[in-house]
Image (cartoon, rainbow, N blue to C red; front, side, top):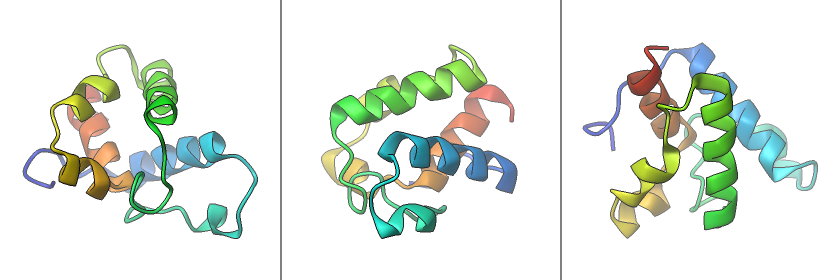
Length: 98
C-alpha cells in the first residue's frame, strides 16, 4: 500500500485513528488499541457504509478534496482488506498537504 500513499505525520495518523474510534463507538475492549497498523476491514470489519461515514468525517476535517470513497474504489479487494489507519492517513496527507 505504501506505493500508493504518502507517509503521514504522527499527528495525522492520530487524528485519523481518533475519527475511526469515534466511528466504531464505545463497544469493544480493542477500541483503545486502534493505531497505525489497525486494518479497517481486516481488524475492525468496517462495512462500506462505515467507510463512507469515515470518508465524510475526513472530508469535513480536511476538506472536500479528501475523497476516501473514491480512493477505496480504486483499490483491489486485497488492498481494501489490508487498508490500515496509516494508509488512510497517508492518503489524507497526500491530498491535504497535512
